[in-house]
Image (cartoon, rainbow, N blue to C red; front, side, top):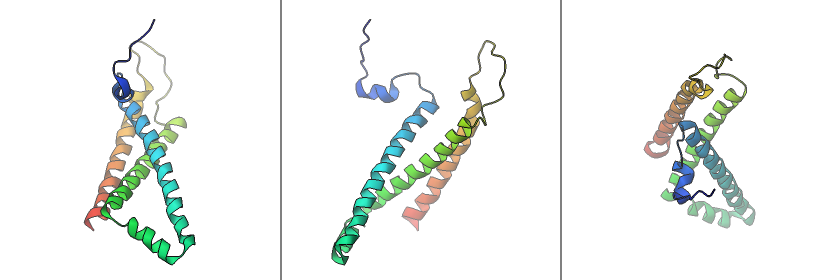
Length: 140
């Protein structure tokens, strides 16, 4: 039997009846890749210091514009989200916040419903840290 994929590339994100945890998983992967990309760019930029003061100052002048300021803010947002969501994943993997084992009776209660309060709490922490960083990056 052959299934036609009529959603195309957008089916990767909106392709099914996904819960919020699926989107957090996708965002965790994307933020991790973004942080790796930033690390490579940072190492390349830092390597200009070897070429001497004029080259270093030219590189710093290149990355001191408003476009890069927004980029630094996005890197900070990705780092905060990745760290806090990683902490959530570690807590869950260690067996905390998943509820005690119980006899499965219909209707089944998935453990994901027991993890949601932790997810909401930590995403509020992410939102608060991003709000503080908006003030730090753009207002002060």
